[in-house]
Image (cartoon, rainbow, N blue to C red; front, side, top):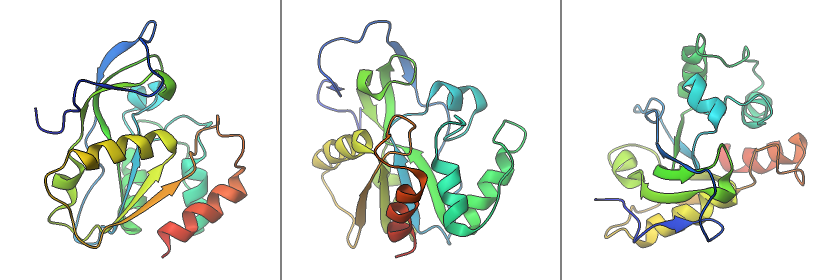
Length: 188
């Protein structure tokens, strides 16, 4: 299977207890001629899988930081207003997706993530104007490096930014520090 890791990759090693096999439940957000930046996470949280859109957990600071960077407000994310969030991303040339296509995961715990297949990131961006990839957190970064090492081709002039996780578990970064880190990558 194209994009499949050799065997599987565990973020912690060993077997996860109560891990469920999951297939990524939704497509990347809209890609058009104005798309410039792909932001990659690891895998959607339980809340995101229930709502059907990226970063739906209210405790995750992802949407707060984007609103701060672009000086806009968004209504609370739920299944009714996904189009509003999609329009926001499109206006700013942003595309969201996750590196993991199929995995075993316990709830929303990245530490339990065992990847069975990667999404084909290069196929998504190959014929687009996307030349910047922002990796949301250490797990997305680690997995993207493995994905890259398995590719037989590269994409020229691709900028990769490793950024801190917007997860509430990342207590080392308050919203202000997250905004500064992401702003440098998104506005460059």
